[in-house]
Image 1: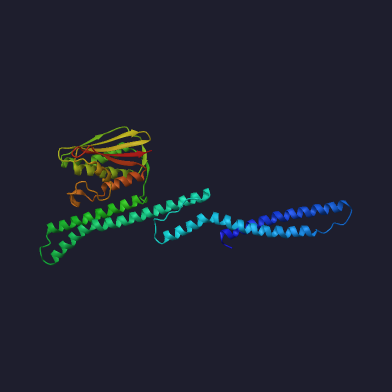
Image 2: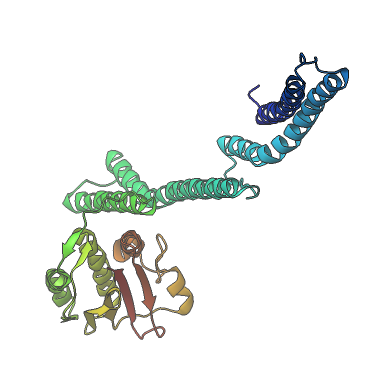
Length: 346
């Protein structure tokens, strides 16, 4: 009785029976009225009407059950497919999708189901990639720590201040790496908390540039800020400052002594465009497509110490996209510098 096709067949049978019964009742009442008009007692329904009633009842049952089975199967087929697909996803087969068909409601439900399956698959992929990235990136500093501590325990060399400083540097790198991975995972899973409110981007840009001026001066790199009248945007200023800081740090890392980095902001239709342009190493076309990937380093010779964690630009992309914006990189080639552009919508 809980099957959809059974319920539909019973409902159709009941409707047909009610219709035929009402037709029979109408005929009976009409005959009875005709007899009363003739001042005679009403006759009982003739055998022909009784036989027709029985036939109508049997016909309604046959038609109702048959029609209910066919209609029920057609209507419940998409639901059955959804149930089977849900079972497969429950067993870990996240590649399962259903074919949208049937009524518009079933098509909408199938589309929602496929979107849910895609999100689950994406989350699972992100989790697996994160685990692989963590295992890969933590292996080297942990191996260094283990080797140095083992050597100190075995009296191979004394654990002096220089060695302690080296071990401390490895632990700092591990801490920075774990924090970056956590923020990136939250942003990619759309769980990064944002505190948005109207923000003066002119002041935000000026403060960020001012904070990095000592590092630029230490490296003999000229840091140029081109102020402009930017409209207020509802953003998380802490996260946007973090994104700009990562872009500027990346530019400083790849700009040689004597070079320059320019920071600019311009109002655009529907938002604001921020740019960080350097006169550094530049990028090839294939590198531009991968520069925002996790742990990507354009210069393969750079170590984790000289090249950072390799997550800075990936975090920039995640932060900007969490604000509904876009970030892209442009370069005319090796040795011709690089420009990173952030587009933030209103």
